[in-house]
Length: 165
Image (cartoon, rainbow, N blue to C red):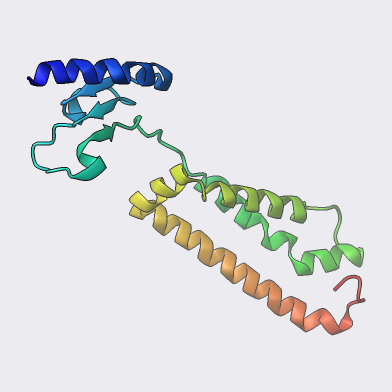
């Protein structure tokens, strides 16, 4: 009685399975099917599925490991103080030579920080306490740099031309 039902169900779902381009299995454990498979009426030894969870299950593809660029972020954070308010004033007054790339450094730092917001990078950070500690230390250094820069700016804002401020 069950076998004819499964054959009919397979025949009905075969066109959809071809469109999905994913293998479809019936009554199997998720551990025994390949990644990307669709399992109708999944077998779960310790879970009683109800509703849609008991009818269809999907086995996701294996997640890709993502490297979090802490070293490049740290290097950029180290360059920021050399491109701060005092350095800009010294260059403007002719006391320092060259442009150290403060705006470019900041743009790159922001770009790399935004990369950390991607789902894969966030999951890696969330799962690794050591990585969290390294990023926390980096965030503390950046906060200290920002606080120092804000203090310098507030000190000098009355002496700056409106366009400079």
